[in-house]
Length: 450
Image 1 (cartoon, one colour):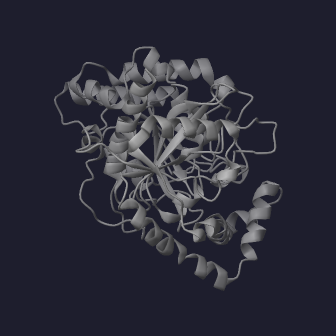
Image 2: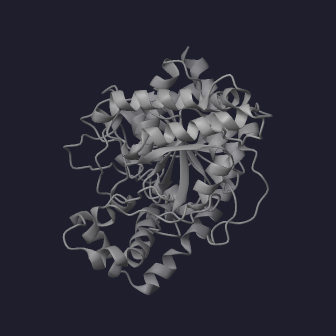
């Protein structure tokens, strides 16, 4: 799916190695990305802010650093796009709303400081849905511009899928990493809740907000995410932990052939015919390596519980935008904030107990499998002129509520020729194993289809 790869640049992990040893110059890599953007941005509209000369200047500085023998970081010279809710010092961050037009943060988000320290080049800011919720931005599907790229991390998914940049960062509160990645045909990875600090990123629902990443393959998301894992005292969800070694583990062969649990979830009726047929074929191809597993009945309530938490916390954290609204907010946002204000404290606090209950229910299942196999979306990307907006997150929100790591792989295609994603879900904290299983599954299904 990546035109960058077709034009001569390798996958992100290999590209990083060539940049570090001088086989490629960062300036040439950035220039290649900018050429692709110039050719495709009018159609795709993935970028909220881009300064080509500034990006080239940063690339030249990275090349000079390497040529003079100074140490280089783990992401030396790698162009990375950032969702436009991530603060960047001196660079506009408008949060997808006209109410923040012209806003320029004075401080970088924690993950931006980490990217800079490891030698990455922030290529630009990508389009987000309004305040990272449902009202879509300007981005269009890179394979068919009549269709939605999903949301809310629309620009990040589309930019990677279209070959404009090898790596991008987004966020997920419902399905905002996994769903757009599945629609656009790239790899999207949402780590365990709290693994990546969110300091300096728009706070919509602190009990759910999770930073995620995009690349064209499993190794790419593993490489980027492992540099972003960490602890920041300003984010109470983050915890001190050892270096995760995601890329090293993802590259390893599993010690035994993985076993997957095919979970339809209580929302299977919302999967379209293409999705159902695709999973029938995948289960048949996996044979003895997969078993079907129902979830306990209480999981049917998970979607409503997640929405309750999301809206209640969003109503609180978006008070400043509501107070300034004189026609700048969409009707979708106004209705959501109004619904959030109507949720009682009792119902909200009771909802916060659910992740623990649901994860306890998943433990028995994870004792029997390496990962859960489930759809990444109800089908392919909806049309822009249809009623679905950025798409239905029903196959994502459950795992966001549970805080489990999830990854979507671009291994399927709908009858309309658009990509469909296959989602794998792991146990909380078991991110490296999930990525290793995802890489194995990619190879297994490639071999099965050859």
